[in-house]
Image 1 (tube, rainbow, N blue to C red):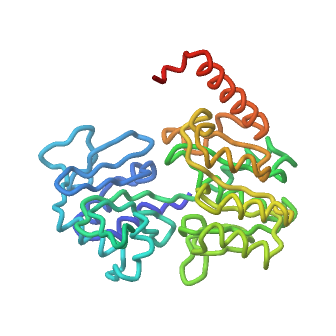
Image 2 (cartoon, one colour):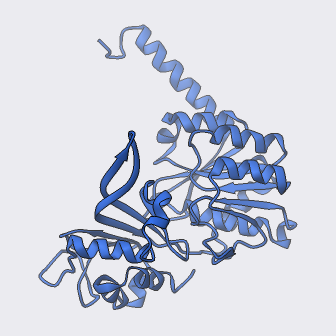
Image 3 (cartoon, rainbow, N blue to C red):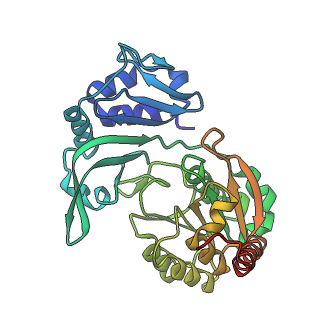
Length: 334
């Protein structure tokens, strides 16, 4: 694990918030997953120790008190400008999607007032809150999953879990390990649209991704197709798949002989099966296995490992049951 990860985020936000974060005890720093900053409200630190309130002196407390650190909206906007490197305009593509990727792979979610043009979000103004997610390398965290899958990893793998369940951390270690000599130096193409996996800076990964080919900043669909055209990968790894065009790109990789390893948001098997994008991804045949992860309390913990075909059968049975119920007048729809 990168022990300096918390310090990287503290340095990036700077100002009064950065000074208070730098005073947090080192043991507590290692457990923090998110730093939530809301204008006029106490700063929250979330992680393995639960949710705690940050004091100005760096101490943490279970409930807010007179010493709790609160930032005015002006100070929140100053933090926002600092994490943009005082160049907000150069980050407009990320900002319109509601986040910024910081050096080291950390991610800042941004809330404010949307500025619309022709019905499309162009930028944000009056930034009122930030959610700083701390990226941590946990080398070896994918070893158990790889051991369980064995040669099955060649059939493709979809990681499903809620936010902060460790999907990105697991993907990074899967990509790293598969590219190492122990796994035959497989050709791994890492499509890193948001810079959270490899955390490239000036073209050089700041995180250890082994011998992967990194397509940094590529939209997932275009990155997958570029990898197929130019890199002849054994595996294509990407984060948070499921958008428009992703299914077609995944199928292109499958037809080229590459196995897909990706993640998708889902709070459990039921949530996964109810998502149209998830069903479409499983129906491509690119993912032979689905790994269901636990919650933020136990990041990277595998709860269930299922064959994709079994989940699709379960979806079909559920859909059939719903149709039968409605046909009998028991679906409750007037």
